[in-house]
Image 1 (tube, each protein chain N blue to C red):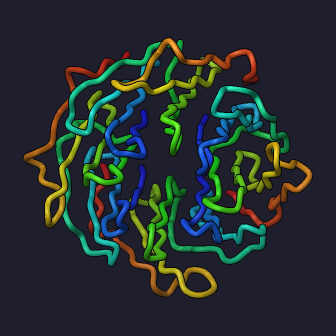
Image 2: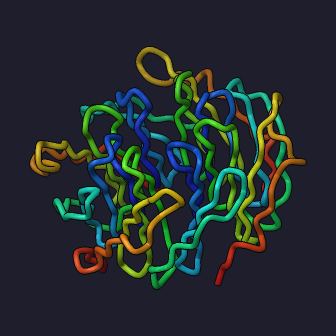
Image 3: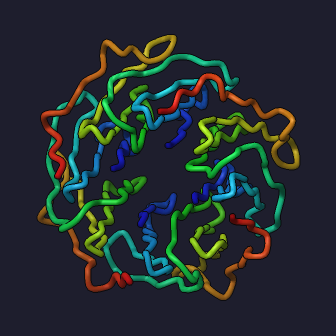
Length: 87
Length: 87
Length: 87
Length: 87
């Protein structure tokens, strides 16, 4: 379970044991749930400039989420599953 | 158990297994204990600009803590419990 | 399992349980796999300015990876194994 | 086990399961071992500006380490043990 503010401070990402990422405004308002991982998420990282969020999960994938005006556009996520090798 | 300095370097937050966050000045002086989580805290994150601290706990909640002049005003914390879904 | 963007946002490092670090462009394109650790990696950190990546592993070593134009030059990695004492 | 570069990129701190923090230059040269914790260290954080390193350990303490010209002066560390309450 991790929390991380975006570099501009407007968005908070919290990663859950259920494999989803929740996005919140700094006011506490809920923005979106990012669904795509099949297992618990270990870490997230915001890109310093390009408004991208990366998440890594026990499902063996890293996913990139592209932010749009009101949050992150899940349609633009990129699954890197086939490239990650986990023991 | 995590430690994180605020972006201005004046405040250190340490999260405990007892579900509290301790705030310290960089001089080592104790500022405050943030009580509200019912279980151990996994991570904390300071907002880069708005003086907000986020914490996530095994109790299934993310909490936001608003900093005031002498620390964080616990009366302003926002419990996001109902919005977080954990397996 | 951790993910971290480089300070310039162009590179994403993801650390795996198999002891390798994968490097990705923010577009999702794969750059390189950094092989050298003999056990799972616990954490990575990018140097703010000098384009160095540090990784720490259960194998008891910290390794530094020097970035070159197209990624990280594994030939320049420095094994600090003999200096790290782990219980 | 965690690694973190200082904000100026000149120093790398790695925390060990034996309760010590190792400091390295970004060139890979060893600087110092910070001894003081009685159990494994979970996290470290560099202060953005004041050249202070904080560490938190399973021994129930947070320690602050003041950097001097050639490293961190362990004589200036401040043990906050009595103020941290752990379950």
